[in-house]
Length: 474
Image 1 (cartoon, helix red, strand yellow):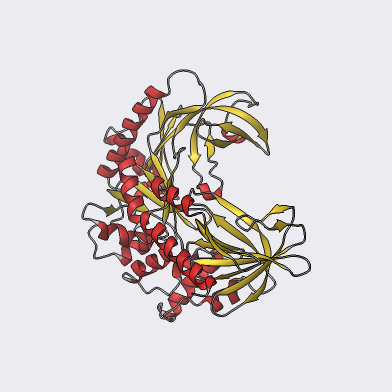
Image 2: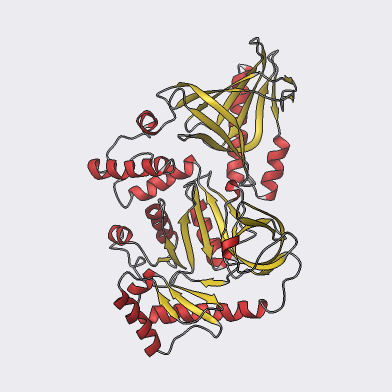
């Protein structure tokens, strides 16, 4: 399995991949990766990738794309870094071609029914005028993680992407992305001399990485792309039909890293290069925080203590007392729900945040059954890295309406959000002091379906039992 890795998790995942088995190699490695793994035969600068790993836009995980078998293996290795690394397969993977029906148009794009969900088609990415009810054939250009809404960006143009070369259906000729035009001409000339060109009806677009690849590597990339183009060409014949997939030559899997997984990534990176505690936890927060980590490690060589410096990081980047944060409640299905926004009313040096929210609407509080009234106050107390957190609800007069304890993956306190994945089972304490454990059945179902891995489900039950004993005073 030849893998291309990029982004803030690149060093750690490269280490995880090359130590997983003898059949994994890293290709198109960046300069820093080649320097850090200069004694590893499995890491080089050229070659064609079977699978590509890159950081998601929100920095919370990675997107794994490529040949289906290779994606499955690479995603399993990514999940192995920590108990709270979770993965979801994309129904609309990169390069998947779909027949769609336009269900709406707004804000410069069409919303399209893919048959397996919806996608967004920017008007600038399709030649013809698009209206509601139109049937089109489109390609997935940018898959979207489920926790970011899961709505991929679509394109009216059809491509075969390999990392080194893209084939564009309906285009012609060969182009090379290079700053130096002479290098671009040299690559094009070598390919012409070797008699290698794109399949009929397709144009070739080489990436900048192609300028560092050997002729044998470029030839293999073109031949592989041509083979996929021919396979796709057969599927693309005919007019658009009912919404649904036409061809899905690649697979895409999203892997979300929780706090335990980021700690595991730190450990793997530390085997290769100096790494401060909380390296990936801090880098996942913001781009500015990521730059701060690079500076700290350059100055201190990674020797910045044994524990994640929560107070230092939050002093610099937030959240601080008085800031507003969202409580982002991830679901094992991959969805992300924002429970609300509140004010940080207290922050402790031990990683504790107290977040207060004003409740709107009416009804009853889930699990508690007590009345929910507009103006109620909710006080949520979280601690960085803890597997549970309580929320206490009070009326406008200060009377308790109960406490709900969420059992979840280890909490992370980012500058604008508290984030975790809910693990279904929870513990509640009624206003009269009655303690009850709830939603064990939902966890059982999630474990049986594979949504929550067995080890994580066992850990959730263990945490819930501990919280229940503590609330009962046992």
